[in-house]
Image (cartoon, rainbow, N blue to C red; front, side, top):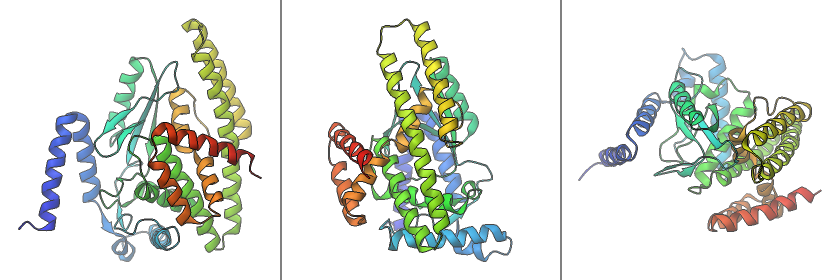
Length: 347
């Protein structure tokens, strides 16, 4: 009889073979990148006890070890081997994501994968490969944005490690990201990036409110709430601009005039964001950037409404979101839209 380890390796070889048949070049870089990442893992306890580890790294890992246990005890997030190891990738980001949307549409380009389903981005373990893909899409007329990602989740398929790419963040950002990535393992719907990312962001927000309160960090709790309200104001401006763009794109204007009007709307949006949201939405705006922002934060208010209706009970919150996951995408979006309106008018 094959050992458990041997069976896992055999299944891995089969999975690799299937992926290669689907899209050789892309999947091979993904496989190599993932294998390199996993080979660099060391148990957190080992890194903390290593005399060669910096004092700063030890302090952050000790905090994250405590936050990992908090995620289980207080947030009902998965109790598994994820984020109990550390890997130094010797680079600034773990992957670079490419987002794309047509010149006159806010509907993001989608790519489909065997495990994650269809998502609105394509990730590369090398920046040069991401930029190459971005250029190909730009040459086809797409609006494109490339973003470095310091952390990501394999949805529990592997024991994801903490990464050096995360360690330059503040303590608050580190713990928030830990909760966000674990939330993907709690609930994930294949093919619905907007739901998945907004759900994880909402869980992260809820988790941070509880974590900071437990740590007695009331000042940071208020700072985080101020940041949340600032980003919410920014998202309101973004949604208004998206509505104007959608109306523009459905009009009968000539392409040249539509392009000029699009530029005016985006320039005004950037100016308004600089005044109302500070650095929260810095950087250029195009259809791809707007689509990516909507994925990560577009439904957060709806999830907060569910949490409020559940009287801030996480068991109820997870049950209600799981019910949404069983709906069709159209049904789910309709319910989330209604919840968005409820949260908007809530005191």
